[in-house]
Image 1: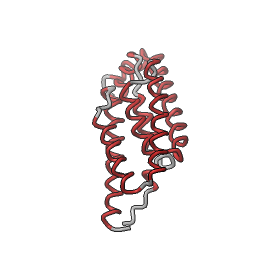
Image 2: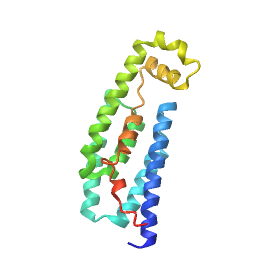
Image 3: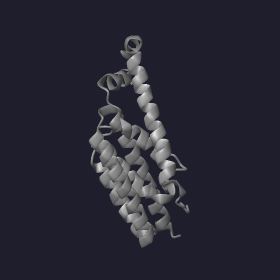
Image 4: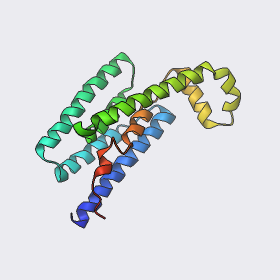
Length: 176
C-alpha cells in the first residue's frame, strides 16, 4: 500500500469519527443532527468505495443502507425517532455493509433502550433530581429531555457506530 493510500485511510477514519462525535454531541445538546453530517459521511464513503471496494461490495453496502433507511422511515412515521436519526443511521449503515450491520444494530438498539430507560427513570425521580440540576449541566439536560419526552437516539447510533467490532472503519489497514 502506498503512503498516500495509507494516509487517505487515516483521513477517512478521522472524518468518520469527527462526524459521529459531532452528531452525538449535537443530538444530546440540541436534539438536532445537522444535515452536513450524513452528507459528509455519504460523500466520504463514496470516495472510500471508489478507492477500495469492488462493484459488488458497493452494491451490498447500498442495499443494507437502503433497507435500514426504509426501516428508519417506518420508525420516523411511528414517531419513535427523528428525521436526523434516520439520516445518520442510514449514513453509518452505508459504512457498515452486511458484514458489520448486525454487530452495529444490536448494540445500537441496546444503547437506545438503555437511554430511553434512563430518561424514564430520570423523569420518575425528577423531584429528587431537581435540586441537583442547578449545579450540574448533565443532570439538568437529562431532566429537560426526560420531561419533554424526547430521546436523543443519535447518541445510541453514534456510540454504537464507534464500537470497534461494529465499525469496519477500524479494520482498515493504516499501513503507517
